[in-house]
Length: 286
Image (cartoon, rainbow, N blue to C red; front, top):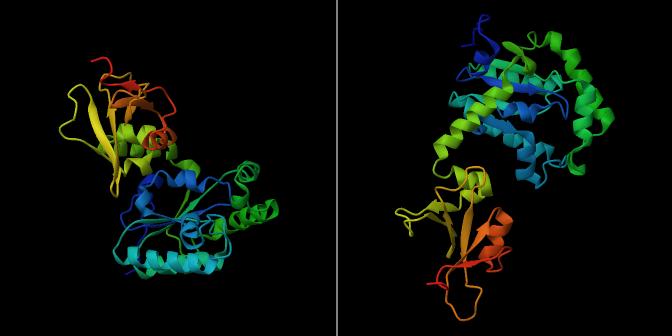
């Protein structure tokens, strides 16, 4: 049964329809990926991510067939389950848009065009600042922008239920609120996220109870290897201080010793037992 659009919905409510298919329309550098941060990451299908998975390079144009085949497969599965889905891609070509619109309509999903209203000069500047493998030639960027501008008045006739400009949305506030909620939900792992990043945090577990009552202790572990760290609960919140366990710097003491770690790079050095900072022995003075 086709979706009956509600013209009284606010733009932000349109994007929150539970089974909506949201197509982002924008030239390279127009801010599609920034805008997509307002959505939970698990609902966003990003063409660059699929290029990375299929070809090992987010800027590769050599695997476009497999990339869109993969996207179509995932999209069909999500639409079949009635899941809200956002597609972060240029979507400048009418034939390509119509294929996606038809997919949404065939599953009764409301289809939304989320248009980037970014000025061409801003998009060109952002595009030029990208790594070489992510840059799109300026003439192609201009052509894609022109296609989207020309298409805008006719998007409803293409079958879109709603047309929303990103500039009409509270994008930054929504993104920050979502990230703040995720951070709170991630406690007590949030400090590990902040210092070492999300990927490293996936290798980490707090110890319960802590090995040392004076500190919170935890372990980075994978396979048969591990690295213990400690964190002071009373540390300055603006100077989150983790220390990793290493061998004692003296020859006569078995240790352990602790060295400050403020990045994954320093964490890796500590794991190699080659700390980049001074180490403080836990036994030498006892």
